[in-house]
Amino acid sequence: MAIRTGGGYLNEINVTPFVDVMLVLLIIFMVTAPLMTQGVEVDLPTTRTVRNLPQDSDHLVLTVKRDGRMFLDEYQVDFEELQDHLRRLVANQKKQLFLRADREVPYGTVVRVMGEIKGAGIDRLGIVAEQEKDRK
Image 1 (cartoon, rainbow, N blue to C red):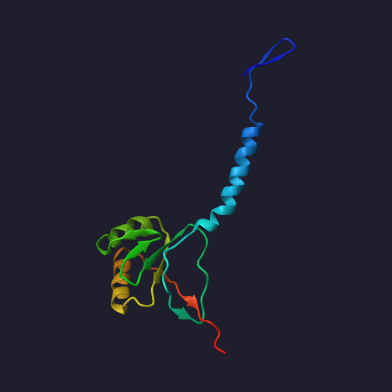
Image 2 (cartoon, helix red, strand yellow):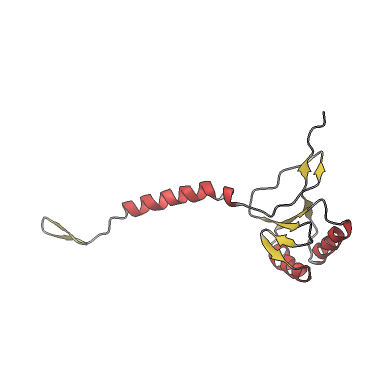
């Protein structure tokens, strides 16, 4: 829309409202993005000393559920495809991998998964656990 001023038309778009809306959307995104990190629910084993997972995007979490299903972050992965996915998503991108296994998963399954992780060329692996409750 052209605005008539004194001697002619002003052919400029007023971008101020657009910038205002974009800044509000950016703030909303920045506030809600950390809240959107949902994972797969598992009953983790407990230990006395636990460190928090890093909150950056340079890591992936491999979850092994009680029924044997595996999820790389929130995407389900078959055991046969696990090594290829790990090689492509973790090893080639130099990301860190964390393993979350339900406390009811058999030890043999965890060892098989760790073998696949090692076979994908990942040398550093973090294990996720929960903090033990204080016994009184």
